[in-house]
Length: 280
Image (cartoon, rainbow, N blue to C red; front, side, top):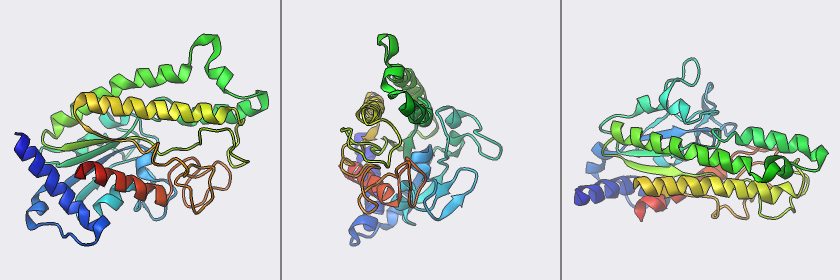
């Protein structure tokens, strides 16, 4: 069993390698082992990154799954802006089926980015913007000695477990990769005016994103799936950086993607990290 697993992973890696190395051509036998399904939310879908492939889900032709596949993997990309773990099991909106419906017994590779909407990270950011007039949001989320964001992260962990169990049931031979979230904010309060929250809230929010990614990595490890955590690799490329440096876009004057989401450069880097994880 282990031997066949290593062969399967190896074939997938070889199929992808030509994208990043420009030298290796995918072997002929990889054609029958190249079925890839991408699941997840907006950090996987890539809203605002041209060219848009799906209006309802704001899915980009340059998200990390599209970059990873690049015509070499048979990709079914069902990532969708706004998706929670519930969208894996149930229809997210009219015309958007449950994402797990895209899996089959012959699926060979699955990537999953989900959890950010379960903890309501978008709403958290909006609260912090409004709270900037009230001396910040950390004190709101940590009132009475309990960190409400950490509680939401903990409550999301069993949902990730359930999702991974269902993925394995529907795609029993697939290589599963749980992909975390690119860094949005630095660990310091020095962020200029591109982020409309109190400076003191910036390291707090960065710590919460790191905590979310840590939870996802731990659930992947407990399940035996691969894990890609792009948070530390994207240090120095957060939304506070220049247009030529950042991998995620700021709240004010985003360029090439929607605010507080990955841009094309960030998606390419996540694809590279996934490839490295598969190769390892």
